Length: 313
Ligand SMILES: O=C(O)CCC(=O)C(=O)O
Image (spheres, rainbow, N blue to C red):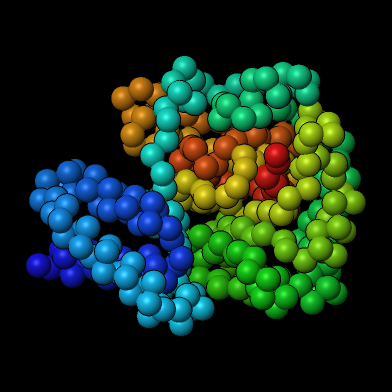
């Protein structure tokens, strides 16, 4: 009975989040998989079916119309994204025993071997000649954000801020941290955020060009720009993303180790635990929707560790 009540609550939340019936049934199957691993009993199929029918009837009669205007009761976190994602086909990681590292990459090679196959690749020094390597630092970003009313508007536009292991809750706290606090934190903070404000994004784009191998008319690398910055230590925890497209990330300063794992359903088919270290000027291409990934930030010898990236299509 306890399981049924929980299931009912999940279904109500799913409807509030405007999931389709297919997606709702998928949640039920995720629960089944979890139940299998934890050797719990499966919820009875008849119970699921009757709850879904009741909810659909209520929906049809308009009982949920008001609820649709609300935001989800539970915001997606890295954890909920991991457990509610669709099951992946393992062919993308099947023959990968190490991450490719190359000194150059042609557009042809990129398209045929990497762009949409899920095969990750590091291109050494692909961003070495960017203006960003000279100019993009803490005070550049602080000036940019302070003068564009960035903090409040970026949040209003729904752009994300990842505080990782820090206590920060808002980007403004980072850029308005006292010099002393920054010194104290030293190698113990790391955050990431996306830029939704077009004027700030436009200014940032003056300091880099999307990697050359992506510059063809089919490749619009001008999606939402992401920045990651910190003094070193642990970076992002192991997680999988749910963004629309694969990503590239250029390291503007410092060294960062990436750890990749195939999703659990591929663990008997694909090699576990791939890793590589990127250095200033390197560009890493990864489909963060298919690979679980985490990062470690090497304490920088000078300045902060800074990376910039975006999705491509
Ligand atoms: O660059 C990092 O440290 C983390 C990046 C990441 O997790 C992502 O792009 O999804």
